[in-house]
Image 1 (tube, rainbow, N blue to C red):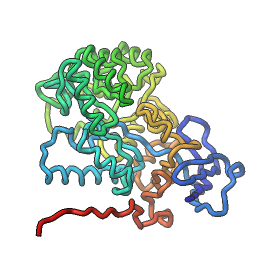
Image 2 (cartoon, rainbow, N blue to C red):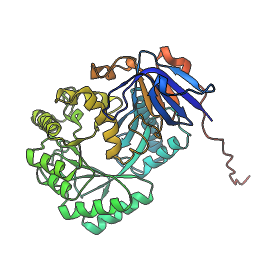
Image 3 (cartoon, rainbow, N blue to C red):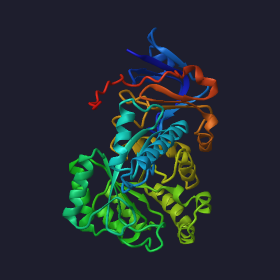
Image 4 (cartoon, rainbow, N blue to C red):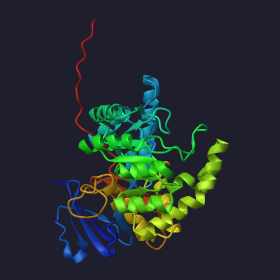
Length: 410
């Protein structure tokens, strides 16, 4: 058995509990088996130690909304698909280097399933874990994917994505900022259609994320009992109260209206809509926190933008500890993977960060990659700072090589 022990660090376990100083995390075969103060955890003599004295160990951050690859309606062109795949691998590797250990490919659909499988099976290394969502949306709606209208066509689309290996569904309950023809307040689906989508997805244990900025469409999504409402840039008190009463997760993706991001937007109508939403968006998150709404993390951004998202949340009134819980435990719960990741607890996968400076003093330290000293997934050290590179094994431990026989005519 492969046994490791992270020793000497302050452990921020992701639950919101008080940090454990001079803690020990015992890992066996990729799983956390024991956590506690140094004196309470017996480290066996065969364990490989990772000295994290003076540093801080916490769960890997989870981003529930990244367009790792284009939405699933890309052309069936093998050259394009190869390039998309390489770009996706690059995105997941950069995400891991920034401390994000799990990423939802929010619209990758069936083409992205094979990359998820390759990562899970060890054929592609040094990538963040990927969850593959498939898109079901109304004809002419905000997001691109399988266009389906009416309850039975929608149910058929969900079944198709489930059979292709997708484990999550993304839809749109309202319009958005992006397309010139649409308006943010337009509903994309009726409540009846959303209810059919969620019902079918629940039967297949697939969480549903609904793009919704506010107004009637957001209420339809809440009434349909989606698992997560993403964005909410124009959310009002009624919408917040509905999400809170229904005990759903609000994933605000503040990064979508981040000032820097707005400055880079090409389309003038998109910039205008985002600028109008900027103060409403942040007021909504502040109110949600005060109301006790369940908040999870997604960015609609790229590698490492989850760290900016947590800083934005702190600016909205969350404490650094609150923001860390949002980015770890809460997001794992929203995605139905809390049994595997999201906290530093016995029985969980060892998806962990070792950080050089204390994020509880200043959440912004997580944005500086120089402070990300070590990242591991499933107990394997994947990337490190120069200081800790002694713990990085450069040899890739992929799966056994397969010999594939191909019949050819000579």
